[in-house]
Image 1: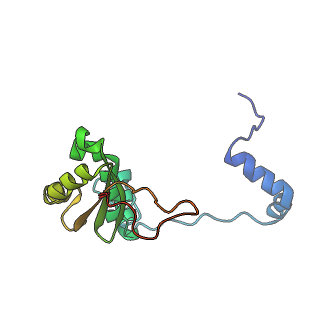
Image 2: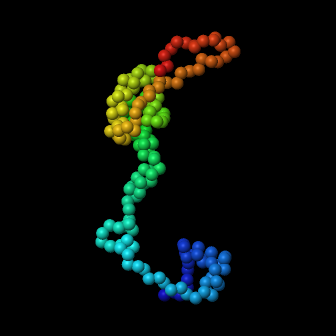
Image 3: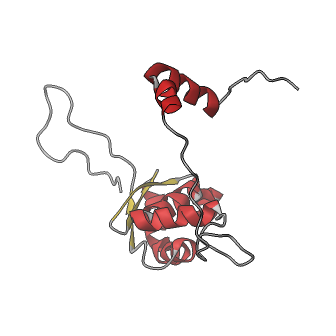
Length: 169
C-alpha cells in the first residue's frame, strides 16, 4: 500500500486553492475543531419511510420547474408541433405546417388555397384532437392561412391598384 497522496478531482482543486491562498499555514496554526454532535430530530435522519432526503425522479422535478415557470402550455403546444404529422396524418402534414402559437391561437399555414379550405372545414375536429393531446383550454382556436401571395409591386411602370384578382387564401 502506497503512502503517497495522489490528489484528483475535488481534492486536487482544494489543494490548489490552499496552496495559492496560504490557507494551509493558517489552518496549521488553529487548534482542531471538535465535531458537532448531530441531533436526532426525525426530519434529519433517513429511515424506512419516505422522507425529504430520499431521491426524487427527474420527471417530477422537471414537472415542478415547468409548473413554477408557467411553461406548461407553450411546452405542450411545441410538443404538438413536433408531432404534427402524427396528429393530423401524413397527407395533411405534407401540405400544412404550424407557424405560431400565441394566446391560445394556433396559426396553420397551408401550401395551397384548396388545402386552406379543407383545414378551415376540419378545424373543429382539429381543436378536439388538440384538446385530447395537450389538454382542454390550451388551444382556443385554429387560424388557417393560405400560401404566401406573390408581390405584384415591381418595376417602374407599376399599375396602381390591387393587382390580379387571383385567390391566395
